[in-house]
Amino acid sequence: MTSEDRARAGFAELVRAETAGLTRFAYLLTGDRHHAEDLVQVAFARVAVRWERLDDPGAYLRRVLYTQAASWWRWRRARPPERLGAVLPERAAAPDDVDLRLALRTALDRLTVRQRAVLVLRYYEDRSEAETAELLGCRIGTVKSQTRHALGRLRALAPELADLVGRKPQETHR
Image (tube, rainbow, N blue to C red; front, side):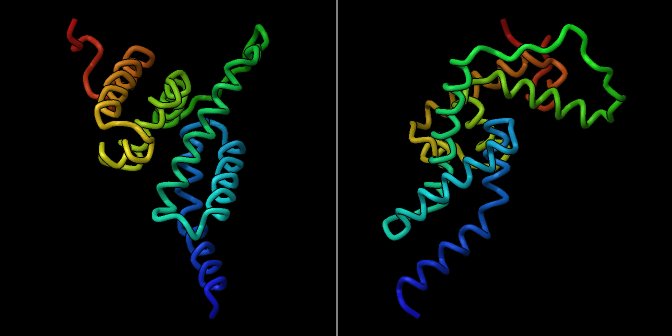
């Protein structure tokens, strides 16, 4: 087996091992399944080009996803918002966990990309502060402050998530 064959096999294994997790990560960053899948493809394309030079392809993949999501978020915010019609269709009664997930998704959409990325890496992927800082290319103090700001903003935006976020809204200090 040549070194090129070994490199292809290693890359194929990385794709098999990381695709599902990276797609979930990208979805949590963007809130759009199709865009998340596109971001994952872009990330894998960038890793393929640099495959031989990368020490930690998983970390590089997440970094590419974060930077691409941030670029997309900036582009989307620069466009005029889409407007819904005056009357919304009736929504069927949903189980509580669905309502909770929808409330969380809506609240996450209102955070900055960095705040969203910090929360996803820290609490969804269960990364340490140091790992999160390395993946996002920032300092541990930035991770800590972004986490604090993001959790506070979630408390304000969605009081129904108080059990997930930590304190009840009335327990916050003034």
